[in-house]
Length: 174
Image (cartoon, rainbow, N blue to C red; front, side, top):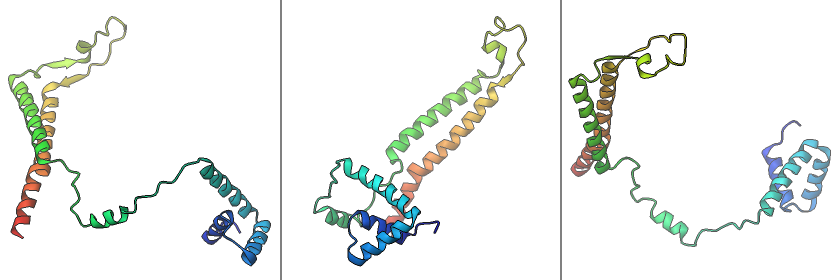
């Protein structure tokens, strides 16, 4: 016997709880004496049982009206965890303002110049060897950020404004 079955595990728990009596108790104790695996499992369960009992934690029981409250509210409408339209509109406005500022900056040519790593960090004073030149195209980076920002705007608009609007409208027609 390499593995303990769930029935044997249940018997071990009943043995610990002193729920076995008579012939059932005698038979289980014989089985326990002949199996080292059952003895090991019994010791594991005893240590767990001891920790649970020694923790002196009092199990709280729910109020008598708990079941009635749960059953009464079972069919009530649950609250959605999605963004509310008002919060979504604030987020949408903020994202649109940020996208507008970035578009204005790109249009003004602020990011047109090429910047190298040597210009950003004064490393020539500390190193004898020259670092590899890494060119950053600011214009392209900002255009990618603006594009991602606009995608975010459309997702937020869909989730927080359009979807609730059309769900309410579909509910009114039914």
